Amino acid sequence: MKRWNPDIPQSVENIVLKATAKDPFRRYESLEEMDEDLSTALDADRMNEPKFAVPLDDEATKAIPVITDQKAYSNLDDTIVHHQTDDVQTKPTPPVKQGKKGKKDKTKTPKGKSKKKWPMVIIGLFFLLILLGVAAVTMVPGLLGPKEIEVPDVSEMDQTEAISTIISAGFVVGETKKVPDEEIPEEYVIKTNPKAGRMANEGSAVDIYVSTGKEKVEVDDYVGKDFEEVSADLEEKGFTVEKEEEFNDEKAKGTIMDQDPSPGDEVVAEETTITFTVSKGRESFDLDSLEGFDQTALDKYEASKGINIIVQSEEFSSEVDEGKVISHKPVASTPITKGDTVYVIMSKGPEPPKEVPTKEVTEDVTIPYKGQEGKPQSVEIFIDDKDSNLDDSDADQVQGIYEDTTITMTFTLEEGTKGEYLILVDGEEYKRGTVE
Image 1 (cartoon, rainbow, N blue to C red):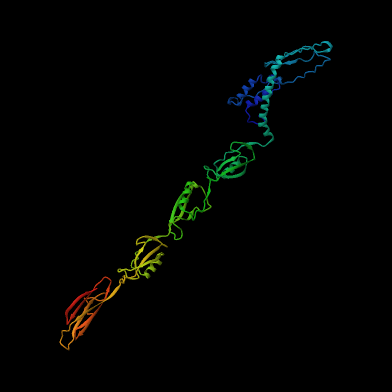
Image 2: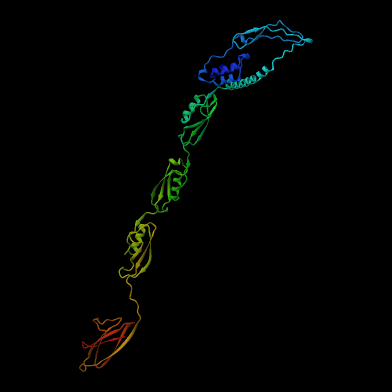
């Protein structure tokens, strides 16, 4: 066996040689003996034991003549008889006795000994078949097929080094399969097929499994979506999320305007930070006070700030001139943004007097003439009503009389008011009175 496979231990070959010895007396005497020998075959102290051998004479073959019924021979060569000793002894062969009708002497062999040998023979043949099977597995492939060699361990090597190692070991590189792995870095070998340490035919193909690193996911397009919702979802998946804010007149506050990494990029969630540019909405500013602004000033302010100014109403004001802002909402210093609307109230000037129902009342007064005949007597009448006042320096009526004269005074009175009058004759008070 060692001739075909030098790696077989000498102890194993010895068991095969002893079990298959030509002389049955040189084989194992019992199953127990063979079993004991097999149980220690791989012990270290038996690896290099002496090769099993039998004496040369024991292996010699003697020709045994054929005995026929017609004739018995008594002068045959002595038959060799084996004993369980190292010496070879011979014993003369007794003559064959001839009975009636030339029949041989029916000498019977004890049945007990014959029955005892059969189990040993069957067991011996069984183990012989096992040993022959081992020999077939270890020796025949080497004789009929290519040499088997061990597959090298290239795990955790980079791809280039692993390929070089496999080729140097006597194999060719088969398929290269890319698979994700949580521990092996990208472009490093995870394993081979056949596995490292297995025996494989020299020159056969070895597949390698190369890591693509941790499992990657494709980044979605989040532009236009709400930051708070997207952020919560990504953090659950293992991403780190950062936010950068900018004012934007078109995008509502909280809307994602840009992202990094870009949509479609493949990344490892736990190792990736996604940065979003998020709208802060329109830029705000504090509203100035618009009180006292006329329409021209309002138009200029509206254009410069990008807001809408709407005249909500007009009111009378004794303090604000007509055509100017009395008040507005939102009030001054309120933060507003472009596009917001400010409502103003404009002044119509002072409120005009209310129209009260009036009535005309007349009062007749007779003034006697006391002057010199032919000379006029001066009469001055002062009236206090809706349109006149007693304090006025100019009299409402002035005339000169030459005789007793009846004067009719006309008063314009508002409802619920009284009129007064004062009559001076030649500069002296003549009469004072009231009318309703």
